[in-house]
Image (cartoon, rainbow over all chains, first blue to last red; front, top):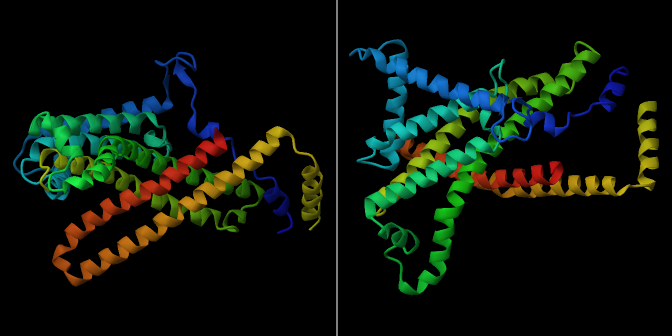
Length: 261
Length: 96
């Protein structure tokens, strides 16, 4: 026990830049077109999603097997679990957008605990910000298509409110619908993934530092059991964040397409 | 035990002189911890109340469990976003 106290006194957390900033492979560090590891992970998530759906759609057998079965179960889950609960009838035409969103975010999140990658692609703000802006533009366009230019009027002056309350309700509705929605979508995904990543790195660094001191020291402050438990928690958070982003996008689209709900 | 004595002496020496960069670091760390700590109280209570009520609802009417579960996840996402905005403030204060 006396040999581990000096080790505990010297534990140093790596500077946060090592966790979140990666040097570019191609191009200098300041070029906007530079390509780094996070961009490579995003590209991998894109390729995996596309290939999964291409393989699943190529056979078209009546009794699905293998990859086709897996993808049909997923699309069924999106249809019954997300679209029909929130958009209701007429929601089937939004399944391609919601499905692509769900699988891209899911595979990017799953990289957080897979050994060669070990960094979630959504832990940098670029990806969640662009996806949130895309969803924002999408539900505004759905609203304009369903209700015409009156959509903006109906969104900030909801019908059925006594006229005197509009002074209070309209600014709240405007800020809540057009400003807070994309911002909260982006921040929710980004902060969840970054927090999970920092937690896992903290416990992993603690485990390694204790393990180099002595073989059993890693169990002393419960570092290794906590690491295992947090990895299991991170698996759940990865799925949950992809599900929550998709279901919120579906709720916003439903609100724009059928405002009477 | 002598290690703790050394640490105490180092702390006592350091406390007498603080460069402006060190003072900024100390105040950033204190405020960042305060920011996230206070931001996590409300959503903690909120999510606890929400999940408790949804468990009650699922126990009263098990046929509605699917719909209750979906709405529960939606509610958890909204309240957790507030705690995570506090986490973003923590990151901004400490590392930027």
